[in-house]
Image 1 (spheres, rainbow, N blue to C red):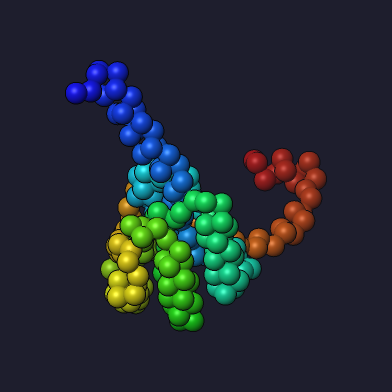
Image 2: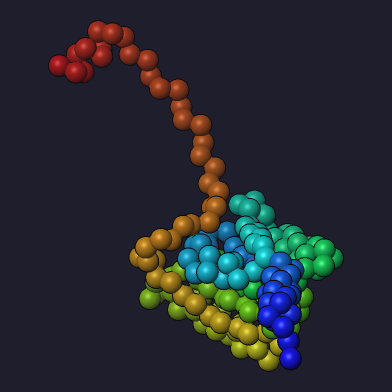
Amino acid sequence: MFSVFEKVSRGMSFASSEEHLKEKTVCMVIMERGAGWPVFAADLQRGTGGSLVEVQADEESYRQFSMRVQRRVQSVAQSGQSVQVIIVAASRDSEPSDSVRRSELVSKVSRKMASDGELFLTAQCGEADELIRAELFDLAGVICEKEPVSVRVRFSELADSGVRWSVKGSRIPPSPKAPEFTEQELRESQA
């Protein structure tokens, strides 16, 4: 028979080991240039010990982006942590070649996930965006056949509230020098 003290210390030991395991897991959000922020990410991030967000820069090719993300996943593994959740936020404005590169990237990073990991493929799109929907469902099927991770596909509509757009760089040219007006011209324009 266990004493009360032994029961409590065993329970605390179990809880602390769960917390220890949680601390060693990471949720990673991979955002393509122009993708909408997946609003459900916050709930998934709470279940892990840390979060990483990789966003494709405006001037970065998909190949460069893919290599950078793979290096980040590798560094997580080398630090003794495991990637428990990966959310891939796809852009509805991606190029046809991006679809192939996305598939390659997702295949590679899903191999580095925890065996009980969860992969989410998501896009923010309207009803007319059937191509991105079909691409993500096809990719989910391929990953399910190859990797032992759970795969989910989620879409949010463009009109959903709470959506935050990812960084989509646009170079704003410097504005031309504003014409200078005399005080007389300003008074006349106000009259």
